[in-house]
Amino acid sequence: MTTSHVIAAPTPTPSTATPAELPERPLRIAVAQAGAVRGEVAANIERAAELIREAAAGGARLVLFAEAFLSGYDPALIGSDPARYAVSVDDPRLAPIADACREGDIVAVLGAATRAEEALHMSALVFATSGAVVAQYDKQHLYTGEPGIFRPGTSGCTLELDGWRLGLGICYDSGFPEHARAAALDGCHAYLVGALFFTGGGPLQSRVWFPARALDNTIFAVLANQVGPLGAWQACGGSAIWRPDGALLAEAGSAKSELLIQDLDPQLLREARKDLLMLTDIAHRDAAVSASPRATVDLG
Image (cartoon, rainbow, N blue to C red):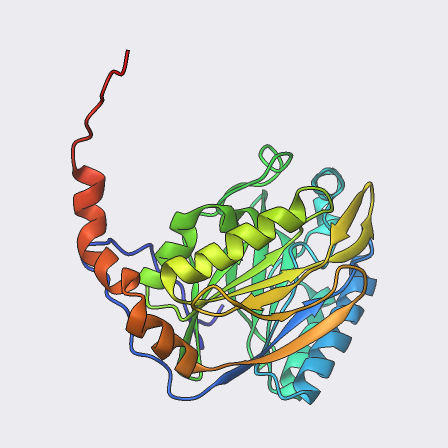
């Protein structure tokens, strides 16, 4: 598997990591909010190819899809027949996606269950403009119902595209501040997360976690969520992009399929980092703060 266009990097240490230079030009991305059909991999692949072509027609350089889009999110179903519901990086069923990326000169980040050497992962597959799968990021923070079926990933992944560094995450990863922080300390300008947030607690979680990840790290935070029914669950939509100061930049609705196309402007990074100095300061302070003693005061 080639590594062109991609850098898969280990988590940097706070004492040595420094913010990267800012991009010179805006990056147009697309966020695909659509409903996957549970268990229908071929149909979901065809739908993904349609959305990739639509994103390319809109001038996007990259399109981000939701978690487990190729199978629909159902860990028990995937675990019951991995050969049917999970894919490998060289799976011939992925050809329509490869064709769409190649024809549209666009990168696609697809949520999929993956299998290799008897192990299952919840993954993001990165298709380059050549149509080749050039990277696979495996979800590091598994959610309830996923352990025992999937193995957690062991490393982060940073993509380089047109001078931009883009860190990948999958759903529950975004609930852990350290995950986005690792991407930011690796020089990422945006944090791209394919997810499955459901009605109930999902809208509150996404609206707290993502602006916080953006503001804490002065990076763009990008969420691609599914929408509509999925087995016993109802996905809550609300795919969105947040600015590096935590403000909402673009948002999809909660009830229908949409394709958000948005330019990420490096000027917003410059403006945020002029006043918000956490990312510059944290590289020098994280280690010291983590190692410092803590006082315990008994108030009786």
